[in-house]
Image (cartoon, rainbow, N blue to C red):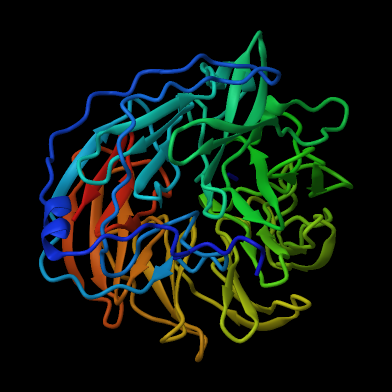
Length: 489
C-alpha cells in the first residue's frame, strides 16, 4: 500500500518591490551550490523544544514577480488543484541553483515571505534565499528513525524523518512540519511550528494518534502532506511500505495556538489498515472547512474483487472540522491491495470531487454527500499514484501514472486522452504548462497542457524521491531531490 480560515495560494503577504532591475538581479543571482546543511540546533523529545540557531539570517526577497509569490502547502490551494496562474515562459528553463541539504526532500518546497522552506528525512527544516539557494535559517526536530526495516519490520525510507509537505499559515507567518523522532529507544511524531522569518519555534507538540492497545507509532508513516484550516493543523497517517505490524489510517488535528485539543478520525474501527497516505498528497478542504481524504485497503489484504468489508477502507471520506465522518463513498471494485487512497481527492468546479486509485477508475462525486456522478475507466493502465493537477479552465485533470506517463482526463465527457510520456510523478500546472518529474531517474519535463506536447526535458542531476512534485514561486520552479532542493528559472 503504501473555505477554511487559511486558504492556500496567493495571500498578498509579501512586501513587493518594484523595478525590472531588481527582478533581473534576483534571477541572475549566484548559482553556486550550497554546502550540506548540518544540524544547527539540539534535538529534542516530546517534552523539550529545540532552540534554532539563526544561521546568518538574511532579509527576505521582496521582489515583484508576475504570477506566483507564495506556495503555502501541497499543490498550492485547499482544493489541491496543483494549478496556478502565470504568464507563459519566454525561454527554456535553466538551472538557478541547487541546495545540498544532506537529506532527501520528499515533500514539496513551500514559498512564503520571500523564503523557500524545505524539510528533510534527517529531520532538518531550512529556509533558503530564493536568489541563490543559500541558507537563511535552519532547525532540527531531533534524530530521525534509522535502520527502519529492522526496527519497524518494513519500510523503504531510511532515515525516516520529515516525509510530508509542510504547510504555512500566512496570517501568522508560521510554517508547520511533522517529523518522526527517535529518542531514548522510542519513536513518536512531533509537530513543530517555526517563524518563517527567523526560524524561532512557536509551537511544539507530540501528535501521535490515540492508538489502541498493542499498536505503536513505529508502524505509522506520516506520508500525506499537512493541511491547515479551522485554526488547526491536520496530520494524516498510514502504514510503512509493506504494511508490517498493526496500524490504522488516521487523521488528527491540533490547534495552532493554545491547548492542542487533539481531535481524531480512525479508519477501520472494525479492523485494521485503511491507510491515509495519498501518494504524498494533502487532504482537500472545502469552503466550510470540511476535509476530504482517500483511504487504502484493510490489513491484511481483503479478497480480490471487492468490496473491502472494513469500514471506511477503500473510500473517499468527508470529515467535519472536528473530524467527524459526514459522508463516505467506497470503491466497490477495490479488493486486495487496490488502494483508492493512492492519490488525494481534488475539489472540482461545480461542487464535485475527483478521486482515483489502483483500480484505474476515476470517480467524480458530489461534495455534499459523495454520491457518484461519473466513473471514468481506463485511467493510466498502471497505478495512479500521487496528486493530480486540475485545469478548471478546460475542466481537465492530469493524473500521474506510476508505470509511466501523465494521463489527461476530460471530465466533461468522461474520457481519457493519450498518455503524456516522460514523467510518472505528480504534476503541477503553471499557467498553460504542465511540469512533472520522473522518479527515481531524476528528470523534469514540461508539457503544453492544451495539446499534451512535450516542450522540454531537463536532467535534474540526481535522483528524486517517489511522488516528488514541483512547486513554484518568485519566478522559480522548485523540486525536492534525494539530497536537497533544485531550482530552475
